[in-house]
Amino acid sequence: MVASTQNGPAKWVSVASASFVLKRAGAGSTRLGNPDASPRVHVLRLPSVQVPVSDQSCSTRLIGVAATSLVTRSRGHDVTRRRTRLGVIAAAAAVAAALTSAVPAAARAKDHDEQTTATPIEHLVVIFQENVSFDHYFATYPHATNPQGEPAFHAAPHTPAVNGLTPALLAHNPNATNPVRLDRSEPLTCDQDHDYTAEQKAFDGGKMDRFGENTQTASCSPPDIGKPGLVMDYYDGNTVTALWNYAEHFALSDNSYNTVFGPSTPGALNLISGQTHGATPASVGNEMVNGTVIGDPDPTFDDCSAGTTVAMKGPNIGDLLNTKRVTWGFFQGGFRPTTPANPATSTKAACKNSHTNIGGTTVTDYSAHHQPFQYYKSTANPRHLPPSSVAAIGHTDPANHQYDLTDFTTALQAGNLPAVSYLKAAKYQDGHPGYSDPLDEQHFLVNTINALQQSKDWRSTAVVIAYDDSDGWYDHQPSPIRNPSQSPQDALNAPGICGSTKTPLAGFQDRCGYGPRLPLLVISPYAKRNFVDHTVTDQTSILRFIEDNWLSGQRIGGGSFDALAGRLTPMFDFQPRDNGKLILDPTTGTRTTGHPHHGAPAPRNDPAPVPTGRATFGKLNNPKATLLHQERHRGLSS
Image (cartoon, rainbow, N blue to C red; front, side, top):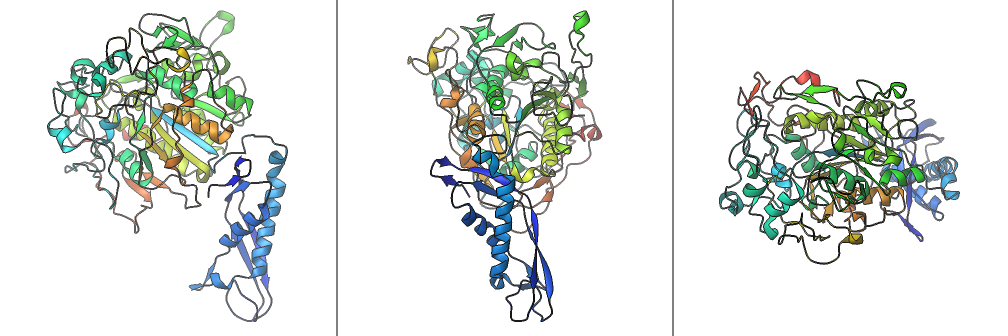
């Protein structure tokens, strides 16, 4: 139910579950229980509900909620039509009293704090992964090859198609080579070229036919695999099985884009501010040009940065959330230092924790340029200080809202989930080609989402899975150019031109976008089921959702892309529904528990065999093996 008031969108609050005792004294009464003549006491339990706060008609809404909930069965007989009117009124009055005493004080004081939202979503968890184009993971969705020995994916009836690769694009592609399916035994690949200019050249004015010449990396060091035409290739539901299952059971967008062209740092900055301009220093090599970040410099306000660093000016979403006292945090694998900072000796913190990926390569967990809040002095935690307590997570303290990924696990288990949480996997699990892979990534995604679904806050939570850039992988869909640029780094339509010669947002150059198409999924009890959204969105659509849900539509300003962003709300259905849980196996990506949304429970997909070999040159020695070292992946990050 999407509620509204005369003054705009209503705010939503949670009313805790409650029990009410109803006593029936005679045989002539309308009964809730067994219809005998003896006096009987019935305990009516009302579930936790989401109720819109409104200055008017509150009791009417609550009576409706209570009446809807007053349904019970006894000895197999449906007695809904025999509800007692007294029970309805009493339950409604009790819920109304609970709401009046527990919630509206903040509303009456016109205090938009963390308990007040424009939708039933009280907790947003943004899982921000690395370097995947939409076609690289969803080119043939929902149709998987299903070779023997690999986890199978069989689409439910009426699963909608996506704007993916057609038979013509698979067999007669305008690029120099055709796209080819990458097998589950080929999870390790070269990192492709995904620079600001290279991606524009690959787009070739929207013809999407120059990827091999501009973004391909065809060779690299083992165990990563490289080959001619690799940039065109894609995985299907036998490798990215969990993501396909999430797409089928929840909501997937096939029309969401990188806010601008280019690599990780611009994507991360746009996620939290919609702004890549405002860098100091203004120009350093290919990292910053005209005061705009187009490369991957590390943040100035981070002890664990190395090489070229940059500071950003202007506000980000953390500043806005702090002003409104909304709890939030950015949680990243490897953020906790191996060596603490020591100001007395001018010793900086060191971030050297590491893990081994599926190919046996040791990868340092932390990447400073993947942590966008560290670019802003107002939201940075330069020395990587821990939170002062579990209860302080999400609040302003010495950690300043910047945490290790393990702090998210701790907060979740303690029932202290912030309103807004950004999660960044340790590098070996973030999906970035060259040091991560889709199978290690799947472990992180599934373990994280399983834990969230099993928490007490799941009924009011939404998870968004998004990506920072495309890595340069082929995608056939040209992006709509919502913000042009005219600088020597631009090359989409002609040398020095991306989009048009119109003045860009706020006059800032080198922010041409939208860039490549990226996957975006919404997983929530309130996500539409087995749904593909075609609304044009970008990374700042996540920013806009936060602004609209917690900040009454306040925008960043100053040329931020949030002013242009499409809404994520078409991916939601705010009608009351079940909890929408889908528990998956982190190794196979197939369902272990949780209901399908198409009637009776469907059979589980075929499991993959237990891995037995090490990866060599991008392939596992056992060609049908899946993940090695399964046990070390049991946590969110181990």
